[in-house]
Image (cartoon, rainbow, N blue to C red):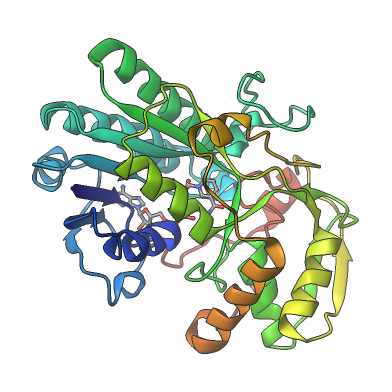
Length: 344
Ligand code: NAD
């Protein structure tokens, strides 16, 4: 079978390309990516056909989707704070980009479309664990764009019979996740800080909790979904219901690195979700055979990767987002932040 991955040069996309390339059922992989946050280096060694460009380009999508059986749509501008700073760019890439992908899929004769939504759609709803029937309460442009994306998938299933599968990812971590940029996620940032002898900065008391999923587990589910042509018009949480506090994460990282962390606590941020934990009943029903990589093992593998790729650690001291998907910067911190002229 033939698969197209949008955003395939990113963290999850690069891992997915490598995972799919090793599966015998898959004969050809195409990747489309505009390299806005991803990198060609993430695809090194994977047999893929690469198309540089945007999912906002319908002509390009027509070439990429021609003859494919499945599309895994991962292209997006991730990060809540980034969307707060530039809501239109976030909306174009995430919501309009998904609509363009769905239209191109329709023109291509209706390949399966699997797409990445996010736990951020639950917003500040305090109910735990988060099950898919909970009322969505997005609190950021990023979350609104993701909610629109998954709703478009559902609508395309009902209006045009498109075989779709919207996933809500929670906190994904693992090799190829960049450490040294302003919107870096907590796991790579803290590994980078530990390996370079810098303090780990915690916003709040560190008792806030997250549901971490190792990227290989995510790729295992995505691969099974494509090969098994799994269709589910409504969103499916892709996480395993674990609940790890940031304090516990620090202890796990100390154990994975064999290093002692210097921890600095700073003020909690406005809008920071206190706890996030998935109900994965729906996922388990669709993918009963998937066995998640436990956190200690996943962290050890991630640390090993960072140690083998010193460039990835470089400047691993970016601003820490306790949860890149669920943190809204306070208005004060937004006002104080200097304009970001860096490449993202
Ligand atoms: P990433 O930034 O590493 O990957 C996104 C990729 O999309 C990048 O390679 C980027 O260059 C590409 N891209 C962005 N805009 C594009 C466009 N207009 N056209 C083509 N390519 C474009 O992020 P990731 O962590 O790998 O996330 C993958 C997906 O999973 C995203 O949709 C993200 O919102 C979602 N997600 C991730 C997490 C997480 O914890 N990493 C959590 C929830 C949801």
